[in-house]
Amino acid sequence: MWLLISILGYFLNAGVYVADKHFLSKKIHSSIAYAFYVGIWSVGNVVFLWWQPFFPAWPWLVIDLAAGLLFLWALVAWYKALHQSDATKVVPIVGAFVPIFSFIFSYFFFGHALNGREFLAFLILIAGGVLISLKQKKASRWRLFCDKIKILFGSKSAELHPTRRLILNSVISAFIFAAYYVLIKYIYLHQPFLGSFVWTRIGSFLGALLLILPERNWKIIFEPARKKEAIKNLSLFLGVRLLAVIAFILINYAISLGNVALVNALQGAQYLFLIIIVLFLSESYPDILKEEMSKAVLVQKFIGVVLVGVGLYILV
Image 1 (cartoon, one colour):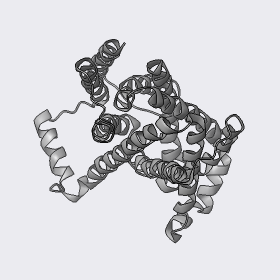
Image 2 (spheres, one colour):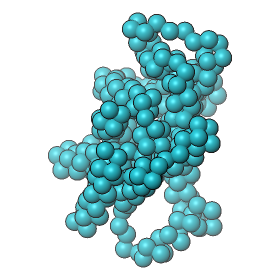
Image 3 (cartoon, helix red, strand yellow):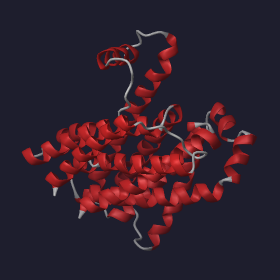
């Protein structure tokens, strides 16, 4: 059950990521402002308390709100990376590191160890997801590998620092996302799913309010041109956020049912959906999103898709 729920959630997420990239690159132009807009609408989830009234004990309330804050901090780093580069670059980096960090956290905090079959599927899903997203370059792979190592540790020239920031923000985002997923699993083990979910969203709402406290952030978020653009695209933004909420609930529910690391490893399927959406938009609506893919790149990505399929088959 958790497998199908995860796949549906990641399908919706792929569409949300493309929309987020469109908003960041062509509408909002600020990761702080976009994280604020996303976080502030989290308060709308309180309507779910109508179906399941729930108020946690004070210690649990603090944990729930802290989980929501973690998620918002992860979003800030995530949007910074997404603003800096293409979705097909950022999503795989974050997607590859989240299950790894989740597995480490789950092992130390919950003692969750994967059996041989699950661990094999775990590795294949990650490998397939990374292969789907790698972009071919003319330079040798060894040269590219050395350059990336130098960028990461700051020994390349200053013009390559944006790439270093992209990697750093992506890894930071993955680390915080993984911490959130493990914490939320702990919450779901001890509290009702829907009620605790709502309180974590309230934590994200409070985190959004904290974002406006620094004067610099206030000026960025409420800059007149940016605010006007946000209001102009409000209906589209709310539609995307509704899909994001549905995807978020599905993935969180899957986490409550299954293993955190395996649910996160299924992001490999998300890469497949992302490629399909990008190809469709590039051909039909290039003004929204345009990305060139050669036959060699498509073959490479197809092999990655096959690996993802193998990983899913092993899980089933």
